[in-house]
Amino acid sequence: MALEALENGEVPVGCLMVYNNEIIGKGRNEVNETKNATRHAEMVALDQVLDWCRFREKDPKEVCEQTVLYVTVEPCIMCAAALRLLPDIPLVVYGCKNERFGGCGSVLDISSDLLPHTGTSFKCIAGYRAEEAVEMLKTFYKQENPNAPKPKVRKDLISPPDGAVVVQVKQGPQDDESETIAPLS
Image (cartoon, rainbow, N blue to C red):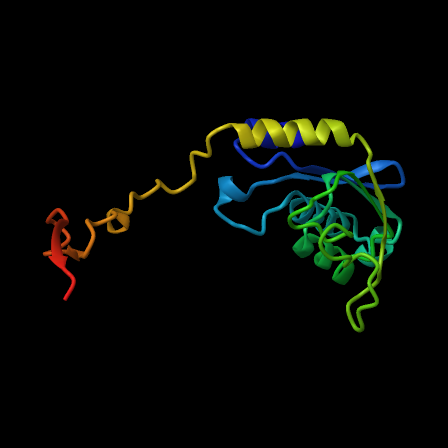
């Protein structure tokens, strides 16, 4: 799943949700593809689990209480909070830590912190195939992001001659910017 995400220009995170040795949900990041910042692998897989339960007329809470989530990267704070609030999944096994956004101990420990009225805590096991996860992340971050905004050159940061100030003059959206250098008084 993570490799599929990478091949589709997404941050390479993939996950599986396993219930009684059966994969009942799987997901990969779909953030760029859907232009929806919440479509992380865990959220995609969780939607599939809920659909699986509806189709089989099973109670999602009972199913999730016996489900293990395997994910390539430590769930972010958003996903860790969703896992804590919604499904009562007892165990999350992940590859590498998420030092910037990790919700299972790297930044915040949503998984086990004593947070009143916020669902059930869950256990985490880190390091499963971590090297592979890190290598895929390195590959992703080495490539150019086609969805990134084009950088804008800031002309207002020009160093003027001593005793002068640069003033930007805009006449309209169709006109090019022009500069006037005025001495300081």
